[in-house]
Length: 294
Length: 166
Image 1: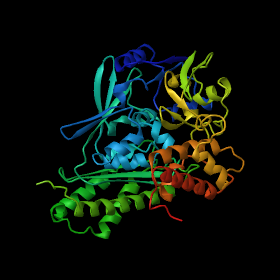
Image 2: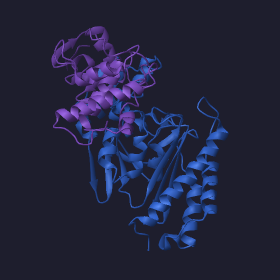
Image 3: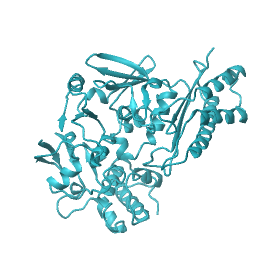
Image 4: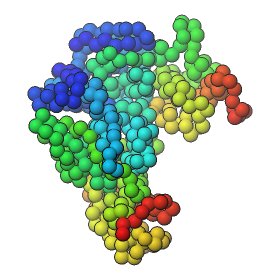
């Protein structure tokens, strides 16, 4: 095995181009488990810890560019106001030790359907910035997940960053597990209201081969809010609407029975998470200073 | 490969390190520092917790090569010299927070970090900070007591805190 230690992003891309089978390692919270348990013997590890620019984030024109190597602990500490949904999801990742090392870039690279950041990236219409020596391309999160632990990366590509809008509406994330730490999600749900665009964003985790949106639920709720004038009036949301939203989210999932839960439980739990998080974001919207679309 | 990094303030070198090897393995098997414990090898139990550049991490999930030129502080580096324990260690002894002792090194590092960052942690904050460290003996109550004790003492030595409860 080789251990490649690029000192810059350009060097990292060159190394990946020269040896496409090299496995990138940042926090190591997935890759090292596979190596420790003999599940993986890559020809090389490509250490990204030394690439300083990966651990930076910046904000421009209402959009955050989050470097792929910013650990969850820093997202929680530094970005809770701009990216509340992602910060909430980050708080549910592993344990303090894991959050000190794990990154959104790693979540995307691993592309596990249970990755905690995915539902929020979907709900907030995030874009994944992907790079190689051939150039840079932007992949919408919704097109990034291609199968169980498969993503849209070409063999010579690395995840550079994630681009997300600074929240212009309330966001929530909820996750079901057996305890409050070190939990691989039984199922998870991310929800973002985009009142400026009259859009509702959703993301389902751990209840389908890939993280996915609940498109029908998004459209139902956006239409409901528009047709009844609720974006402007900020009136209370009928229980029937919340319930219907939960049903549509559950319907969008295609869960399986596994060691963590049955498919039926996941579907039921998702409908509950969706209904609850909708109640929370709507309360926040009614109380907060968010502006609605004209 | 050779890996060179600072451990507990001392420059150390390890040779013939396999590229897939963990920092934990290097510490225990190559540098003679068996304080950090090897249990789950998947970041679940926290027994291998060390500081990496001042941040607590599971050393089983750090590739040895990633530690190159960086600073590692293990449980062996918490005490000042041979016979002066860190206040967190003293509190663990006094509160009886140790049974079989296997989880203790990781808990000490995690608690040490919490107390360094937070003046007077609430019980919820202590539980959250220790959520990545599993103990199968104690039921955690004595560990909670030890951390409360260490935090209260630290607050006192910092000039006293009127909020210290009974």
